[in-house]
Image (cartoon, rainbow, N blue to C red):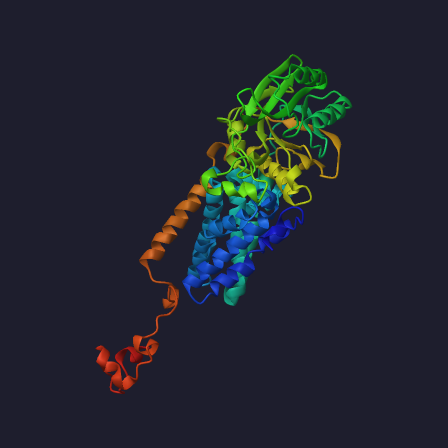
Length: 504
């Protein structure tokens, strides 16, 4: 059910209450152990639903990923069982913090990277995304889980229902209040950007020709952006292709994406800036797609290539972010999956980027919900960084957003051609609080979770609830007659039944 808060279904309003049934279910678990198990299955189901579109590349590995990473939600189930409904104030702080820690762990590049972070569901609501400018997508996720927790508590605690619902409303209004109080980012100038989307064209030659044909029909602009893998040739070894692209740069600086084997036999994905004098700059993709562009622990998981379209060989990653001067502005280029990482958007802004540009290709996942979910991430990155952000997808969705995350253009997967947008570009020195202070929201969540875990270790479960399956007296488990119980060394009561049974 959680999946419907993201595109395509896009029932983003449901994100404010979608977790309530799960919270109620875990709070009513008979034991802490059962709550942890329910949390685990909740997490596994969520991941299967959120990542179903990876089946072509990961195959049966999706089940393994869901079971392994879904285990993190066991801790969320434990937190709910211990705090809901008995400790409502602590629950409103700890339950969202544990959820946030799970999102942070999922976001580690070596563990695959983030997808379907709950806060990203609010991409269509700039007033809510105002929280992202303050504390990143993490603060949006925290607010959503806190409201879900408050609503669940209101259902479980009738006497405090009014206060809890008022708390939920207050948290929900935090974003709009921040949006109203923060002034719009200043604009240094306006840059006209063209996004070129040729559609699904499988062979490098026809794909290049399709991009050329669309670009040749554009009016003069400041910057033209092609999608990921738009150039399937090594420009260093194909001066003829470089010359064709240079001719197109007469209409505006051109950002293409090179996906080809170089002279040493290695394959990388690179953003290449083409100016009037030819190639002028390059950025090599740093964070690769697990299983799509490399296989983690290939000696262990390499067998997936025999049952799916997982990467037959590992692409070579770059060494870090870069910025390019294009179209009269400083551009921070990032490629495809890198739009999912909040820290990369911050990194290019701290290098002086005034526009964040994503180049993507979701041709493997056409017909799934992945393309619109992917494009929506640019809105979140725009709001976080206070920078206009564009995504040009080879096969769609291509999109553009202003510095507050408001949508300016949307070219869906069924469209072919180009769209031109005017972006109001802020000064390079402009910063949002998130640009300045980074992931402090996540660090606070880690501290809260650690403190809650330490406190839980030092005290028994709430209301004397057993941690696991209740332990029956030995005499009952062995069905020993009461008259013979004394033979096992148990004191007898005046009723003739063992002392253990008396305590029961």
